[in-house]
Length: 393
Image (cartoon, rainbow, N blue to C red):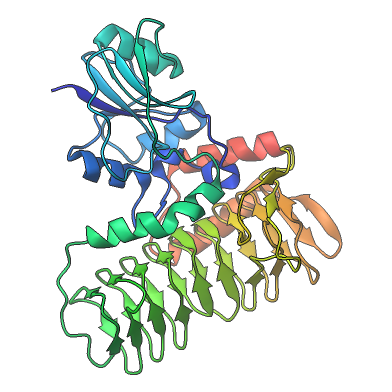
């Protein structure tokens, strides 16, 4: 059997979401894009081709090769593919193209080796145009979230046990792992879609979950929280207030009052009490976003677009995030007016202005937060954070 190589061609622009990882590793529904691709293809990846900036953190998390030459025939599949449906049936030396981008290619060893070095196809490989979905921007993930989440929920394969003392309404299933703690007053509304709550999670009193939604393992939905449709809460999160049509990658906190809508949060984010993200302009017009301070403002094709937030971002109480805000990795926001609409990585923002967040001070805070979840900062992640700090100064 040929190898399965998942590649990140670097053609997508995802701002702060990929400062600490490749797009391959992004949670784009209930699971990561990689997990969905592997599930759809029925096999695990044999190797990865990713930008050098993402190689170290990925190597620390996988046991297969990263950015190494191919030694046998390979099926190369884009890590920007949403992983829904089926790939075209390709012959050897044939590639499926979505516009100018490679969706998938079946290559001989020499061609696969060439491809691993540049993500460029040799000229003799036949190109076949197809219609499919490749993520290019964070708002693409939000746009396709309802369809992707529906597929992930359908593939959950969990039983539907009794959820007493919760109130269950609606026709769709509620898959609640038997280890989940469900307190009195919880409402599970499956009128609009299924609900999955994974092992070790806790649903505190009077929490309301509206399907379709997914609550990851060991996460807590606090008292009185409202989790609206198309919300994905990754593993080990603590969430409260109101959340809808958003993805939390994992190990993040939004445990207090405040609204989060049509947004994507990285890992190890903490949103202070009363932090609110606007997801709709007062003019009801299309939202535009500048993903990084150096990039151009882009139209999203969406009226609803909240915040794009990188790993380890912290906000103080009462923080206001305007429609289409983008916040870089590790930044700290503690200002009484609205936060900047575009903020680079490792910035410290107060009413006095904006300044660099000193890396040693930042790392101390990151380690303290991670220790609360019995986790330690991986050396590869620390090295990447130091790279980000150096490039930001």
